[in-house]
Length: 323
Ligand code: DP6
Image (cartoon, rainbow, N blue to C red; front, side):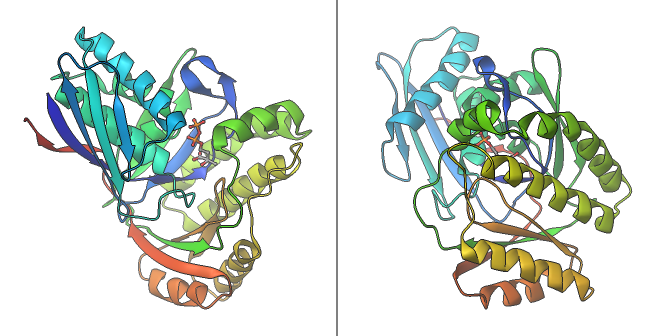
């Protein structure tokens, strides 16, 4: 009753920010993402007959909020398998944890993949995605590889791979900037934005256009059009965040320095665009070949602590099973 799974974080090019309803963690909008194959989460799940409750260690530490979300996900898997055994879960990231690099997406994708395998369940992909979504809205996107589209259905979501890593071998340079004070979690931030930002309704109502235009750009492999749309959608999300009360100001000075440098590099002819999630780190998406120069340029900026490079990666998968 044990299995180990690996999964990679993903970065959204067209973002998810806001929920339809708390129950089931349904997003208000669809999203389009790219899996970061260079960063990996490895999670082992062992169900132990007779054990009460779950023990959850994230990089060797217990965290009550994460543990509660993990248990809620495992409860759904236990229900599918008609068992009540508690589990011990150990999850490790090979990238800086808590640095806003979407570890919850890779974490919950690896968790449900390992958990289902440990219980001998072969659930249909949409059901596994639904269970992963209850842990983190961005997690279903890490179950599949390449570029992934998540769209809303009436009372659920659907995930679809729109390009494999080989179809469009983009590269991502990640600038880890000054971390600053601990950011507000996405979950808390989204709830606040929906209640208080005067731009939240426009964010939701204009989102469908961004998503379908970006999808067409991916299908046409039209990098300049995707670059313009992804930067626009990212800045629109941050406009909502920044006009939330109290404001969600995730950027640090080095974040802004990276955005300016990336725009200057593009103006000089380099195929690169930026995106930023709920934290101060910057992801620079590049056409093949441009990443080394982008990495060199970003690492020279004041406040950039570390620069990571990642190809587009595969979806979550079982790496070991059995006792
Ligand atoms: C800014 O998936 O972390 O990265 O569903 O509440 O766990 P919860 O939120 P989460 O939010 C991700 C927000 C984002 C944009 C994105 O990845 O689409």
